[in-house]
Length: 250
Image 1 (tube, rainbow, N blue to C red):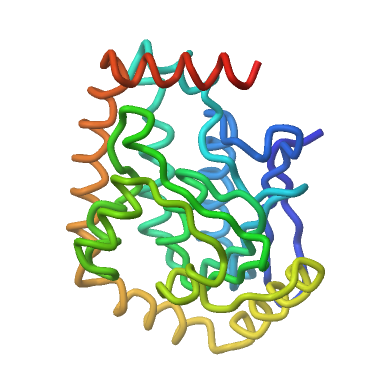
Image 2 (cartoon, rainbow, N blue to C red):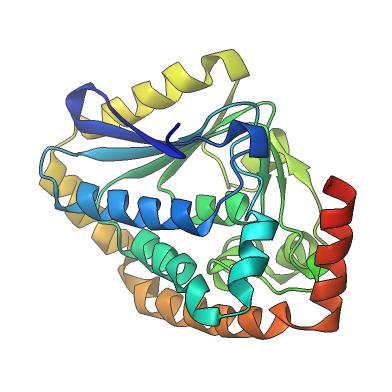
């Protein structure tokens, strides 16, 4: 079974579906590598007009696979693929959409900040529990969330790790539309197809214009976050939190 499934729809829509439903699509380093490969391929392929990210099973993405993450944390170079994925998201030149449902934890939420359109099922449950795990925000969230929500709300979500559902995500402007779980796949594909039908060069140039003012700063923030994140991984606080998590889930 492929851990990342590529589905080529009509009208130039490519769907990348996270496919570890038994692990709630928790991301491994191998999955990050495949995502980078597919994002780069879609960026270079003239027939691809929009990219849709989704998740198989009852969750979109439960964050990083903790066991895989810890095995790579002993050598920070092993985690570079995650940073490469984030930079690839920032530079992706075509419309990027997400269809999200169920749990969206950690990177499962911060990845949405880089999407141009997010369609959410009413089952969506988001949380960014970085500080609870002894870590710090990642994925450019320490820049993007304060910009969009203000410092106080960003603190509530990133530091306190407050969970929130689809309705609140909509109110916060983190998703574009909330639909029923049964309608999610069809409506997200319809939205992607509608965007793909627009003049592709005009779409690409417009997206570049919208992102231009913060692109360089976002790359710098992602690198700065990654450095602090790597330092925190070996901290007693993080090690204790990880061990407690693994013991609870074994």
